Amino acid sequence: MISNADDFIWDSTPAKTDSPLRVLETKELGQRIQKALDALPDEYRLLLLLVADEQMSYDQVATLTEQTADAVRGKLHRARKAFTLHFQKSA
Image (cartoon, rainbow, N blue to C red; front, side, top):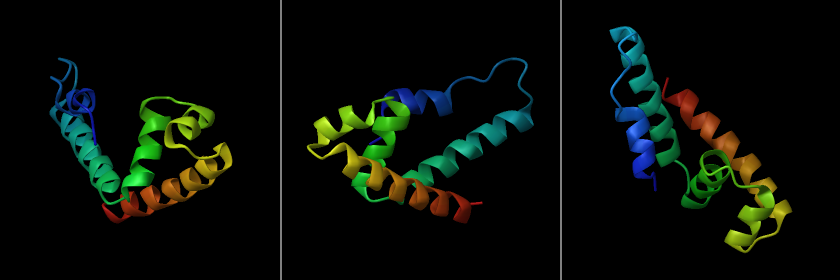
């Protein structure tokens, strides 16, 4: 579900000014985020990625997924809560 662009963000070469600790923290954060996303139902993961990663509006997501904007809002609320729960568990 994650695009190659997302892989690039987490696997890219660190800046010369980044300390080894900072590089490790960034990598671990990326792994935690991916683990939390993977634990979500497909629909929740899709909605989160469309809004957060693709920066689509609720109306655009509603049109794409053939739902109402209100349905998208409600599902995104539940998706964010589920993501937060899974992310906290991975700490």
